Length: 243
Image (cartoon, rainbow, N blue to C red; front, top):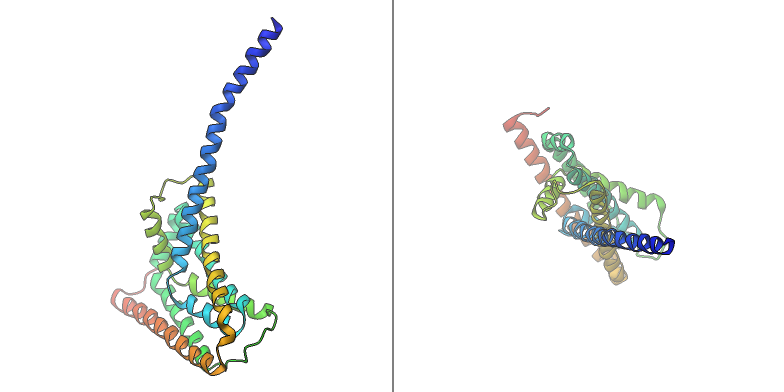
């Protein structure tokens, strides 16, 4: 009798494990799908050519891959921050960013103009294989972080992409964390790919061509900055300041 009871109890435990196992597999697969969605979204946000992409290319050419990658990683951290706001639906943060969009645009545009002027008048150094400089890498990281954080269009892009992917309002806490991790890794993967690709050809570029690239990059950054400042001032003059 005791043997029969043990056998019955053992079979019941085995049966109980089946749905738990299936649930675990479902959770893992669902987590991988959410992570992959975040990874793709991170690339989609980072890949379009803009000020950070131009700076990543220019600093990889002028310094080395580490400096270019650090510039991109500053943007990746900012993208992750905006992604977290969109994923968790922090309404107060969304309202604040939307209400101060023009102020952020004015700050970001002014910073872009400063970077553009420094880039235009900087004298390109000889291309060498010097080891990465921590101070230069940190400067690149801060520039990428600041330019992206002062661009509220990024959060609007995240909201639009999240809505298009059906991710708004459907995520629990763990899924939101997985999604944000995917966004960060996707953005980081793009900047690593871009800086690595540019690093492969940097030794084929002469100092004269690097100076030309600096000037072209500076003009493009200046145009981005002028557009940001002018659009912000136009909105502020038309609608008045928002508080």
